Length: 215
Ligand SMILES: C[S@@+](CC[C@H](N)C(=O)[O-])C[C@H]1O[C@@H](n2cnc3c(N)ncnc32)[C@H](O)[C@@H]1O
Image (cartoon, rainbow, N blue to C red; front, side):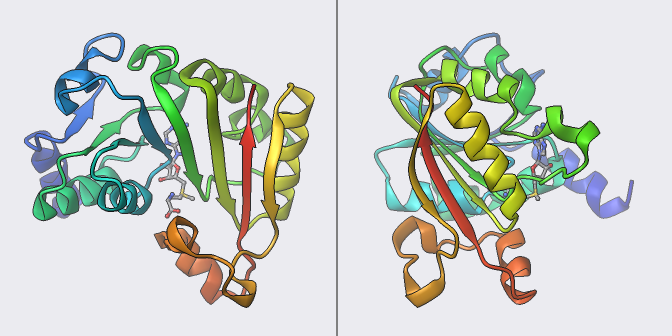
């Protein structure tokens, strides 16, 4: 591990807004304690440097936001910006998404943002895609009845797969846009650009958006 990475890992452990599996108890009490309320939270999954978590926290000071990623160095970035800006309504959790039910209660989430999940195109990778049936089951249990899942991706095959799995499991597609930046259609939260989104745009790829309900 590089010295810079090591330093960030050490620093992350001291951040008041960053958590790991070791620092949270079972269930979602740690989040109610952190935010000081029991409002349902907005989740950003595979948050990377947390661009959506930060944008959501700035836009909705009265809502509680949690960014989740398994990579500590990326979580460090989002948590650091939140601390520097004094954003107290956002936290970050370094964890695997497949384990989320250990750290959150059923129905504790009001919506999920998933910007640029790894497409994992190979057949043997299907079960690791963040929209495979097993993952959708986790989201369905975490989301309240009116909760929705919002995905941005440059990858047409991934979006097609997500639609197929959502519809096959009783969910509904609410919005499907295959080129959100055409005619400047993306405004508000959709206009937020993550690190991976900027790379895809620079490479000339269209950005797709899918919003769906799982129940
Ligand atoms: C392609 S990157 C996108 C990062 C960021 N959302 C962006 O748009 O810049 C995918 C992210 O998902 C995270 N990730 C993938 N699978 C995960 C899992 N099972 N649990 C937690 N994080 C995961 C990776 O660590 C990575 O940061």
